[in-house]
Length: 485
Ligand code: NAD
Image (cartoon, rainbow, N blue to C red; front, side):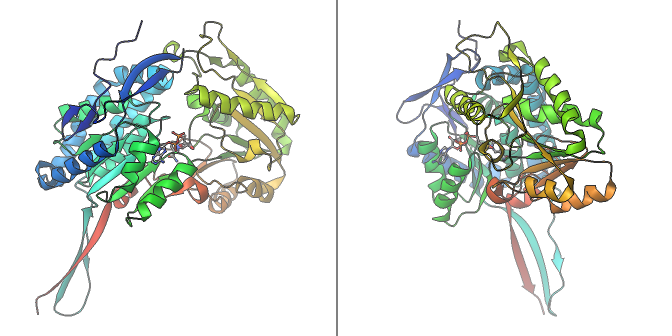
């Protein structure tokens, strides 16, 4: 029996109204836990994107554009309250759509609410400056919205990624056009409903589901967009940036990662252990900031390996609604990608140190992958260099700080890193020398908190979202010089 979804999933949200896509085609959504058809979503086209951009522009000239920063903040805070009140329902939708165990989906809903609270509170706290200048002048700066902002979101954390990008953009007074991923967009549609019920004026948020190469490409290339926030793969990010460049539009790119956690011999291993494993298997490893490489100093290497292996063997993998440790991966395609990496590992004779079991009750049609710990992986091997985006972690031994840094920095990515050591000097030396956007010391937060600026260097992207920093990214600075003799 089809699970109940309490709204029509086949519509777009444009200018405060739910409507069908112009061409009427639909895209099927699968339930990754059993491979069944979950729902159909609209296949928005360039015509729909154009309508959404026009609706956003009209909102800037209308009620939304006239709101004060304080009023915008109140609306965001109210959205946050409503999201929190509906966290269980949002978690259920995410479990069905993304295959995310219920407690993980609930954590995402709570994070979405927190983004709305945080950016609601911040909306009227972004100040300009007065500048010392020539005699007879008063010079000052204002922060202004870009205008219409485009938001292209992947399937792995729809709620969190919508929260961080749309939350900051709305706080600064932009009007948003949002393109969710074609594999998962139920919680994004639910969020648009909640936002409208909370009093967000028509056109401030528009949602156009559809295919990446169609609706996503149309949004990236639209001349009416003033800023694009893209979260997804490196290859698509490059396409989006090229399309935006044709219109000289600024872009924030939040891309992939191959993030390390580095464990020195003096580390508190009891404290580190849960973070080492959780940051690899959370959301079945489909996390941009997944700690997919665990670098361990040689004296404690075998001990860490043994303890991680023990945890892996205790993990339970199964349907999202059963709320186990690990759910399925998102799709047949992703299952194939991850399985191929495991075949490569076996063919290369790499040491498979442990694999978790899939529970017997898991439907055969679901996209389950056995979480796998691969030991003694050469740092230059594909498994240690490429983003697998599945529950696979590699262990790499090292000798000393210098080698740890060479290995940690030796991939095309630079998103997050974790350092486990009791040595205060080393904590700071490592934090400075790691080439990435976020470093955790004696902890590892996948993606970090709402308050912490987040983003990458190298192929992991550029620009920062989250925290107060995002408010600068989602606004532009105007300088005003007044001559008054
Ligand atoms: P993807 O690049 O395939 O898709 C992301 C989004 O882009 C989707 O909405 C898709 O429809 C759209 N898209 C696809 N082709 C497009 C095109 N030609 N023009 C415009 N838009 C297009 O990525 P994915 O497979 O959905 O997501 C996984 C990737 O996202 C991983 O690499 C992961 O690391 C990354 N990610 C990064 C972060 C971060 O914050 N750095 C967070 C989550 C995911």
